Amino acid sequence: MIGILYSTVGVVVTFGYLPQVYKLLRSQTPCRDISLIAWLIWDYTSIVSLLYSVFDVEDLKLSIVNSINVFFITTIILVTLYKRRKYSDVVMINETEDSLSQIQSTVEKVENAMDS
Image 1 (cartoon, rainbow, N blue to C red):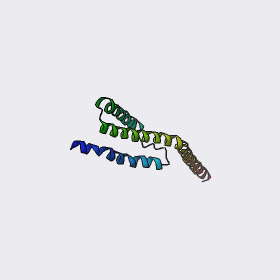
Image 2: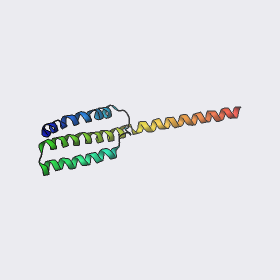
Image 3: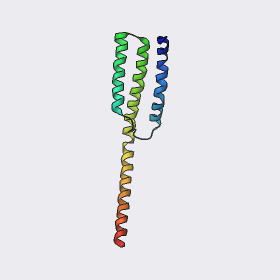
Image 4: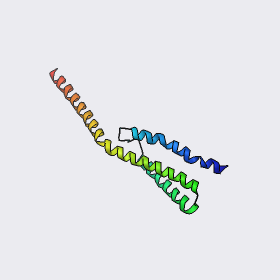
C-alpha cells in the first residue's frame, strides 16, 4: 500500500513546484522575495538524498522523486539568479528616480518656504 502511495509522490511534487516556477518565469522583478539560502539548503539535501537513493538504497522510485526535486529546486535557484541579474538595473533606476523625486519635492518645499 505504501509503495503505491509513494508512486504518486513524483507527480504530486511536480504539481507542487510548477506554480512557483511559473510565477518566477513570468516575474519582471529581481525576485528578492525568494530566499536563496533556503533553496540552496533544500537543493543540497535533495542532492544528498538523490545520491543516497541511487548508490546506497538503489531504489528506483526514491531516485525518481529525488531527481524531480533536484531538477525543480535547481531550476528555481537558477531562474531566481537570472532574474536578479536581469532586473537589478531596473530596481536601481527606480530607486534613483524615487530619490530624485523626493529631492525635487524637498527643494520645492524649501523654495516655497523661502518665498513666503
